[in-house]
Image (cartoon, rainbow, N blue to C red; front, side):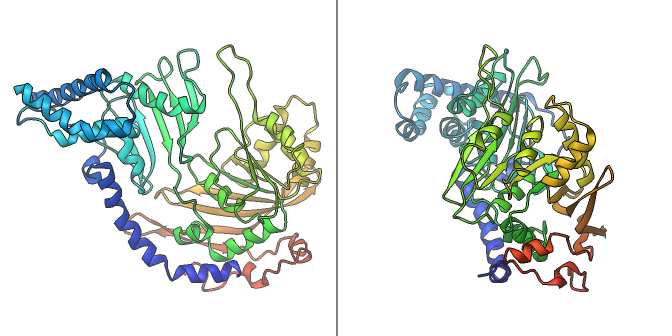
Length: 476
């Protein structure tokens, strides 16, 4: 079944999916045993805490600490599954024995917070379970922000102190064999579901231990999801599908948080299932659906500053692993040279991402990254490498309203003199802003058929010529 037919079938289900999603969040909130709506408040509003409220908060924390001490004394080596059912009984016993807790403590809230500490990632666990939240930002113990539906909001969540935040960081990085301390105060890691985590601690972070979590969907997005979000059009999707299947080398560029990794994941899923795929990342995030996938992850230096394995090392090694496709999570340094050489020496169909503001900027950044490899090459030779290696640059942007769009698909046509020639095949036209602050625009073709069109035809992939021509129906 063609991609377009699958899209048309799933479009009829989109309203049902949307309704199911709206019912899902209350279920998640119920699992977290917290009212998600109560977590959020208006940003930048500092609430004055009365002495009475402060006393209540102190008692709340005292009860948690007493239960925690009892757990350490009586259930130190017991599995978490045995401890959780006993938390409520322990709270009741302590409240019976100590009059200060009677009538002033929400026992259920105390038990829920302890459950989150034991089974998840403490106070931020409800945010991680809420599918509407795409990013969680902990700026020290007293400030927790999140990105919800593309907008940053401050939450009412607080940690006990710096040590509480540090314990959550340790809980994240320890299973991965990573470490964070004063000698190595920054770390990149991932959650079990693939969500990206960055942590930085004092003395570098002045506000206290800081955590930034970019959440990934439990079920990886498919191309139909990007079409429903308005990130791409159906014609763009058909074109990108054809480019991947025809083994063109594709580079996804964009700013931080623009959705590059999501798009790379979607493109990777177009790769046929009978091909061997090698993925190379700093922290393994890609969620590919194929069976024959080998995931490689770089390694930071140890406490003595030795033993690091860089992306460049992994790119070199991957070429000895008989790859049909090489997928690089992000190119940011000297590995650019090895990547370009691989693309130019028979490893067609490679995919990669990088940071830039436009396709032209991405070309300039690649030139700079190749120079970081320490090889004394003339600029023209570097540009010839780039022009010969990369076929398509997909530019992605995060717009002011929080939406993520593919703003251009650009063909790298080759060299004219000393300049790399770029030609937009699709582009995003912004038309204005509606009453809700949402940007109005549409994704349209430029009317130019790419030079590699014949290469697609030779590969047995036919794209109707009208895909490259703007019509009245585009974006409607």
